[in-house]
Amino acid sequence: MRRNRLRLVGALAAVLVAAAVPIAQAHDKQPTLADLAQRHGRYFGSATDNPELVDEPYKALLGSEFDQITPGNGMKWYATEPRQGVFDFAKGDEIVNLARAGHQKVRGHTLVWHSQLPDWLTSREWTADELRAVLKKHIQTEVRHYRGKIYAWDVVNEAFNEDGTYRETVFYKTLGPGYIADALRWAHQADPKARLYLNDYNVEEIGPKSDAYYRLAKELKAQGVPLHGFGLQAHLALQYGYPATLEDNLRRFSRLGLDTALTEVDIRMLLPATEEKLAQQADWYRDLTEACLAVRRCVGITVWDYTDKYSWIPAFFPGEGAALPWDEELRPKPAYFALREALK
Image (cartoon, rainbow, N blue to C red; front, top):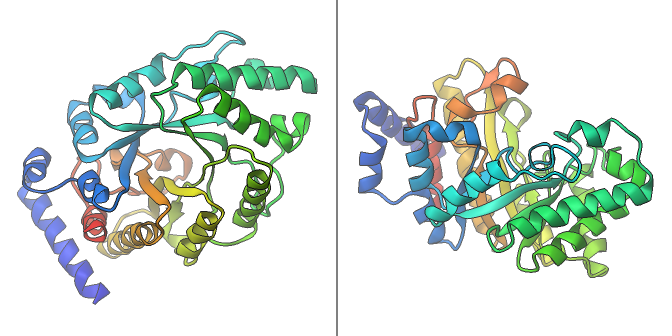
């Protein structure tokens, strides 16, 4: 049955591509991914980045197909506080304003991360008191700026190593593991209505890294720390196998009273892309969507931008790509139709 469905999905995609059906025309005739997700009480979103917003066909599809947006880079520390105490929210504001005009939710990404930090933060040693003050000011200034405009924040991003030990970031080394609870408390003080998440990659399956988050989440909840959700990035690759325990993993976090979300989804492959690989990719997009739908507190899915035209994958994984549901010409791939099938 799965193989027959894939043939049907592939055939439909091929017909649309061959006929060069305009995207807008296709949308006029059918509900969008967001429409379909809303029927299940979920959102379906996409990341985006500021340089892409001059691409009008891209921007039109971003505004019509999705009901949630995540800024890919515009809210990270290097962009928002390029000099100590000097804040610049122009890039984040552009995306928030775009989303609000289109009645789309915005997920804030990200407040505390070891990467893409400004030089002033990484080029010197800090005492614990100094860094604590810097961290608190950064979090609260940014969250207050977007208060009421951001429905959820990735507060702490990628805090653990693959074996479940804490990542040796400047924050961990200087402040210890308590920086995570502090970051959540400070963000909550700045916007009590925002949903606060921990977020990471390679946590889709039950294993050492997701176990570490499960233990941490349990401890934080027991301490009354304002943690509301766990984000599973879901940057997957065909050559490494599908995370078979994804649904069980989502379910165990929901039992802690947490929402979950698939926050940065893409499914890359070794190039060149073939019909077989695209069919397998479509299967995976369908399966992860069905896993989310099966768990009541999995609140939504965000692809890490929606088109191969703007994917981060080729620059970071040479020889890999074709990771998203639309190709570089903004044409839907088999993965897109698999998503529709799952959401129906």
